[in-house]
Amino acid sequence: MTSETRADAASPVGTEHEAEPPRPTSSNAVPPKKLFGVPAPVKRIFDKFPLTTYEAEGIPGNVHTSGSPERNRLFVFIDPKQAAKGAPSFNPQCLRWQAYLKFVGIDFDLIPSNNHASPTGALPFLYAALPSGTKSPIPSNKLQKWAIEQVHCEEEQQLNIRFDVYASLIDHRIRNAWLHQLYLNALNFNQVARKRYINPATSSSAVQTALAVQLQQAARDELLKYSDYIDVNVLEADADNAFEALSVLLGDNDYFFNRIQPGLFDANVFAYTHLILDESMGWKYNQLAHSLSKYDNLLRHRRVLLQQYFA
Image (cartoon, rainbow, N blue to C red; front, side, top):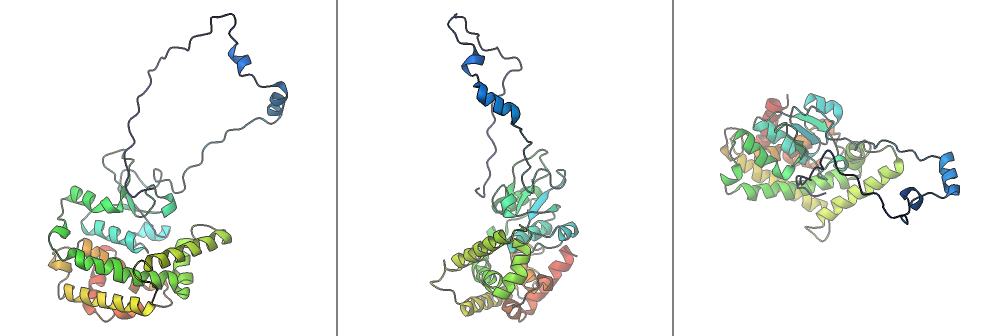
C-alpha cells in the first residue's frame, strides 16, 4: 500500500425494480436448468458433502471498529495498557506525531496497531472524527497539514530557513545510530526490539525468527545507503555531533527556534531523546544516552515536554 490514500470512486446504484431477463421463445431453446445442469454423480457427491460458506473474518486490528469514531484516533506502536494511559509510543516516528498533535492541542485516542494492520502500510495514521463517517485515513506525511487546518497553527518550516538543515541531523545521523543500537546490537535487539515488534506479532517461533531476520536486514540495508560498510564508531560519533549541534541551536530557550510553544521540530527531537533516556525501554547498551547526557539543555527540553504533555 502507498502512504497516500484515495477516496473510492462513487459507483452508480441500480434501480430498485429492474426488468427480468427475457425468457427464451424458440421451441429449440434449451432450458437454463438443463444447460447448466450438474451431472448426477457430481450432484450426489455435493449432496453428501454440501459446500458451506462462512462469514468473512475481520481484518486484524480493524480500524473501523477500534476506538470511538466520535473521537480522533491515532494508530501507533504501543502496548495496550500504555495506550490507555496516553503514554509515549516506543516508536520514534509514532512518538513524533503523537507529541506534535499534543503540542498543537488536538485531542485523540491512542490505538495500538502495527504495519500489517495499517491501511496505509505504515504507522502512524489517523482517523479523524470529523467529518462524521470519514473512512479514509490520514497518513503521517499529511498529519501536519491536517493539524494546521484544524487549529490554524503556523507551519514552522516556513518560519525558519534552518529547519530542514537541522531536521536532517535528526533524520539521518541520530536515526542511523538509533537503528544500529536497536536492531544490530545483539543485546538490545533481543531485549528491546524483539519484545516490542516481534513477540506481540505472533506466537510462532518460526515466524518470529523470520521477522527478526527481516527487521535486522532492513536496518542494514538502510544504513548501507549512506556508506559502503557499517562502522558503529562513526555512527555514534555522528550522533554525538548532531546532539551538540542541537544543543547549540536550543541554547537557553525552552523550545527550538525560540518558539513560545513546542512545534514539530521539538516533537522530532523529543521522539528520540525521550526513548534514548527512557529506562523502561530496557536498554542493555546505550551509547546514545551517554552522548546525550553531556547536553543539559537537551535533557531539560525532554524533561519539560514529558512533564507538561505526558504526565
